[in-house]
Image (cartoon, rainbow, N blue to C red; front, top):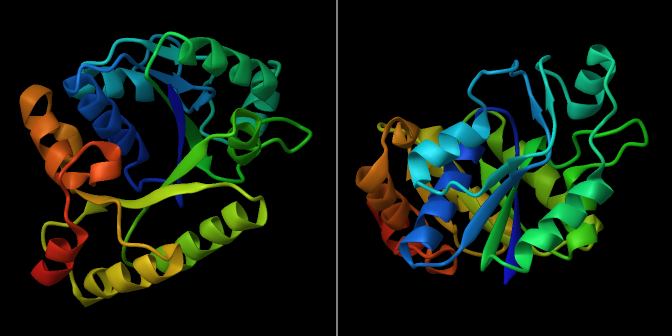
Length: 236
């Protein structure tokens, strides 16, 4: 039994695809796996949310979206705009613990970054990880301000005494430039460990066996895959 909280360093870094990849590999091993999304924002009733993409990519169907707000804002702001009560992270923790009793792995996908507010008291996905005593997998981007975003996220994790499960590049470009290639060494230095994976750009457009194959090659051994960070660095 284990719980893994997945957060991103920014929007659009491939967090949902990484969640699906972790779930797909657990499913491939024959493990019972559940995926929980405490708060889905920016998606209206009847529209496909992040968990629909996880189901399509991984084949895992034990998924739970605990709250949904239509505005593309933080969960706290989206709940306020919709006139709805915010998600209860204490309630989310209870749900995750119950699922962990019957599933080998429970993956919890955050909304936005580590310190995005879930309620008016300022609760964050970091607080949920602490409640669950869970490791946190950080999904980072490359290029632009990616290294700075990763540094801030990792510093916030360390400041809160949370255990880093690893750092994964969620969308490695087909043709990386000098900035993207340079970021790899910087990200590993910040994490004080080799990369836990790098999924290729476009992985989210795959499905079924093709996605699982990409997930296996793109995630490291601790996440159930065969990704070799030294080989990845050599390929740069």
